[in-house]
Length: 180
Image (cartoon, rainbow, N blue to C red):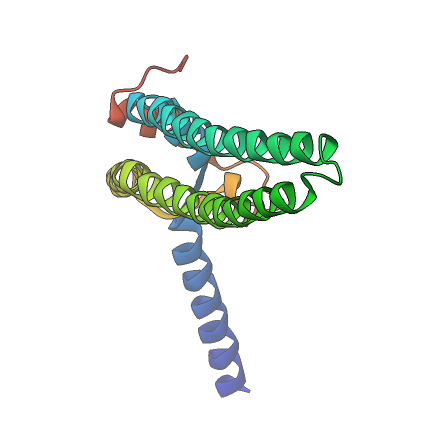
């Protein structure tokens, strides 16, 4: 009986000690998307990405316009075709059709190159921003003694109640005003 009592007291002590240790771990949450989007670097990157996207779109649209001009020229030649000039017009239309196939290939190649260039530029511009934000998150979490910081913007935490929102402190660490 004495051993049973000692075992129960020991088990209770271990349980209380583990609860005390668990209770001391602080859990906070942040909204990384909000933090990243509030930085001046992100705003500048967005403008640069918009300009690059518009430039690439214009290049492709110019190529498409030239393609359409060729198509219209071929249609016009076919409309003016007669028995007297049939062979000559057919040869010209065939030449235009070959040119249009080459243009289609160049347009597709240009579209792929544009997507790759935009993806590469995104990595180049947004990578350092994300790294800077992650460093600030780590710094604030360590300073405040948090064991866990959950990101509510990623959808990885479908429910949270309470906890401390560190978003504004991370923004402050980055020198971003709360209204951005």
